[in-house]
Image (tube, rainbow, N blue to C red; front, side, top):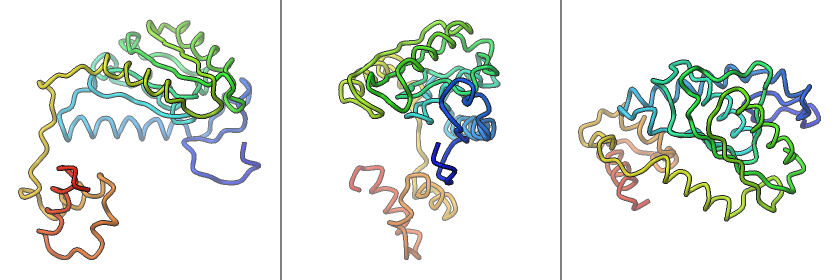
Length: 219
């Protein structure tokens, strides 16, 4: 797809026609990586899978769909939902929905002028996934190319608010930075994407202050 040149990718895309879209070299490794991220989040924070959403644009949306409906834990690992933006179902011939995940709601936004991932591919994705047993697949189209539309984002937010209603019973309680070790502080700063802000830090109090400022919205 990129004239043979290497570029960041979840898996190799030879082409987006149905025949070329079957191999997807690397997709199982990426699927396993996402599953590991979800499980780590669950173990580290206690957040249930039912309060997690996989979402992505284009290839990221394709991988979200491919992974979220095939999680190995079945009903115990059922996500709150999946969001696909300008995406599609990759490796459709080997895709199966894990028993217990048939009720995971999917929201798919797609541009009617998308020349890269054609609108008919979105239609085929919905047909394929629902034929395989998914109960709820919303496909919404917008007059844009391979990008997102503000109306699309608004509708997507409405979907997220529906599947993730306020629920204090599963609120994550973060560890106080003052109680963290240097190793934990650095890991939290890395996870928050604040590595550049911590360059040159030598004192623990500096790491604590940075993380506190991030959490309080000062950064």
